[in-house]
Image (cartoon, rainbow, N blue to C red; front, side):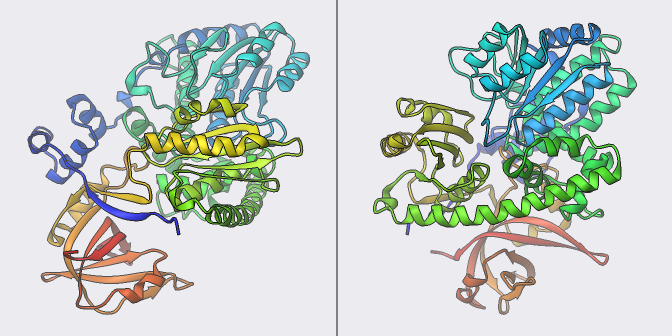
Length: 583
């Protein structure tokens, strides 16, 4: 069928750059090679990457609009004016709402109205009905958005007409015409610092909260209470940055590294209850993987299945009892989400596979009237990964309007591609990796063909091939605990800073593959090179294990890790690919 084939590719770097980084920063040549390959070779960027100290964070004024927005909020608080905070319904929006609302309360805001639109009933971003309702209930209020609004021309104009002042804080791709808000806060507006260009919505909200905290301090530094609040808030920034798949380099690397420390040491009542429910072990540190696979899905489940305000209530809960009750609700919502997701993925997959042109299509665009709007986005992610094609899943409503979520593949800009097909769309927006769109059911086929042509003309990889990029080829003898710890210093890993993938050629399978795990879906292999044996774990590859024969030599691509068990510390490898050696 149209499943992508894995093609091994080895990253290259200038040997002179590797030598310079190794010498100047006294680092392992493999680490220097990885940095050079990822374009981190400027001394300032290398310094910040290797030593992501909080002191290296850029001041909040590096984000365009932050100073003006903080002044307007300061004036509103001192005048006891109502402040409405309007956020998106995903992890990024909810975490940003939590940070800014809690900061304003600590700064003395008495009339605060948090608002999150209903994903299915209202859709993404500012909507006219909500604006009119909020203006009627809160006349003369200051409206502040989180993670939305940078393309909301009409809703902002309506808010201004109804007497609201408007501050837009966002990070999504903006268009040539910007909304006429009182202040626009966006890291990529002219004058922004490149180091902060890839902040998520919560990251932007954090910068604004930091500037507000400075104003309520001595003008340069926050008060001790607000400063402690900001350090605790880094955990929410880390969660949002990872969940929104933002590049974990530059400013984001510092924020996430220290945010993970905050999640490990300064959990709120709500986060503690959520992590216990998610099975996060108290003796294991929270990592970006923990966020991506255990924490974020449960926060997102509220917006997908119920209302995202439940997640906000959890993050701001003050008692263990309240936190536990809300965590129970999110856990049940996540179970329902998983069930529905599996059904949509199966149906969408079959629909695409039944397309006679599936093999040659550059995209997956599928639609159905029965698919749950709150789950189509995550289902699109699954299909994009399976078929290695930009994927759009559309749910058609009773009025013949298709509402969809799009997910991309590495290196392909979704929003730019959608812009080239805009004549078929009613609305669209988002960023390079993920986007939302709306179009008439009658336009789906024409849009599919247009989108297919645009992706085909602009993709840089080969259709039907998933590229596995390998950072370095080494000998097995190099894999000791000290070397792996050095590699682990490159954490946190994620988009823009993936876990390094290493390769070893000509290793021999020593003994029979062993099926492991409760359901026997995983495989443990012993691979030998010289007199050294390496334990290799192959997740969800039990079906392939019969093809791996003892005594045969293979090349393996893997990520190294350290396993600690009952006082023993050993190096192990998580396999990414295997092939016959010399083929």
